[in-house]
Amino acid sequence: MYGYNLPEDFLIGTANSAFQSEGAWDRDGKSESIMDYYAKEYAGKYSPGNVPSKQELKSGRTVPLSMDLPDRGCFFYDNYEEYIEDMQKTGQNTYRLSLAWPRIIPTGTGEVNQKGIDFYNKVINKLLACNITPFVDLYHWDLPMCLMEKGGFANPDFPQWFEAYAKVCFENFGDRVKLWSTFNETYISVFNGYSKGTFPPFLMDMKNALAAGHNVMLAHFRAVRLYRSMNLGGKIGIVNCRSAIAPANIKQDDLKAVQIQSENSFDMWTLPLVEGKYPQFLIDEVPFVGENMPANYQADLDKWFTPMDFLGINYYVAARTQYDTSKPLHSAAAEPFFSAPGQMFTPYPAGLFDVVYYISQKYPSLDIYITENGCALENINDEEAECDDPARIEYLREHLRMVSRLIKCGVKLKGYYYWNDADSYEIQDGYRLRFGMTWVDHKTGRRRWKKSRYYFSEICKNKMVN
Ligand code: NOJ
Image 1 (cartoon, rainbow, N blue to C red):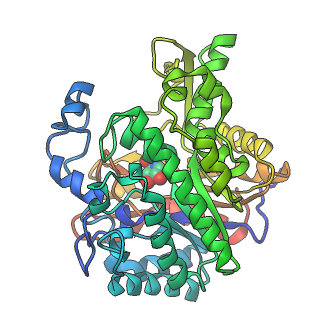
Image 2 (image 1 turned 90 degrees about the horizontal axis):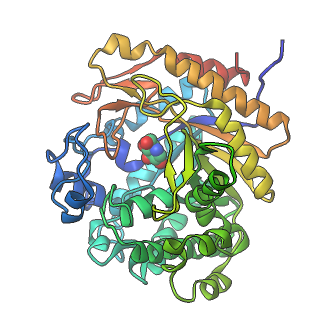
């Protein structure tokens, strides 16, 4: 039998983000993030299945947010010790978490909140005591609202604000954290937030979005440069997302649409960080991008470019695209190949192989981590059924077999993080979706392992996917 094994030193574990897991959104000095603010502001004006029109979005009155608030997450703030002990029992050797900027510097810039530092110190120390390597994201969705009031990513001072925040994090945690990522899913944060208007802060202005995105690139460089100068001996990279993108039909135009989608969603956010330039094809081919690029972008990249150590890839879905010049990006979503009932993302394990293999060829200098990959099942308000989750077991088996194959093919794949550790909060869906391997009662915080966690535990302990 072919053995789907994983290397002994392979990092394998789970992930979650601060705003989605911690709860305690206003405790111990933490200020409001854009996620807290917009969820409260718009709660109740959206119900699943009732997605508002672009016009409604523009008016800012109705937005696709669930009626739930991210005020509880999975109660990680209160129960982090038990969660981490569960991770240890699972046999995982790593956990990916993010730090909440508004917990660490509630005013965005300036004074540090010691209680925030204390919390993350306790979490990091507990992880290390349980032999779990922390992989820490500096930014995963939750910009302090006070900085959003000044334009957020689009403010030209954003790179300096971010560098100052990163400095506080490196100084306080850098002696123990050796794997750092600057941003999570730059494409989604920037485009959904500033151009498509589907995520907080719900803006729809491409010029502003590209300025915001460029500032995020510069902020990344500043943090990497600073990290290098501090000689802390760890690695630093970024987490981007990439779907498996297929042409609607095998014809020249649709293949062009694939390239546009791929460059727009991925290379736009990765190439500058690796080669110091934006993807030229996209800029030349799509006026919506080319005409809205910030002035002097190349000079800025030349000035700030600093190479990073690794790339994190979040992989969930496959998409089909077709060429369509009536759309701003000259490409439109085509009907999916199929869909899986009760699942938000249709699983397509072969796409994980394709995406990671493609990236490893295009960006050969980088180590790769699969920083997210996860199965979202709908909340059906039935604890027994939700804990008995064969779909998630199959999901894990098939995707982790692809991981084993990728490593056999020589891809420098160093780790895999299942999203997510425990049922938490989703930006557009609140508590309606359950991604976790640990089931959570969202009212009380009571936890219970799902069957998938027992299955995952065997993989972690044996480094073998059966
Ligand atoms: C990627 C994001 O990083 C994460 O925060 C989110 O929960 C998952 N996608 C699932 O939607």
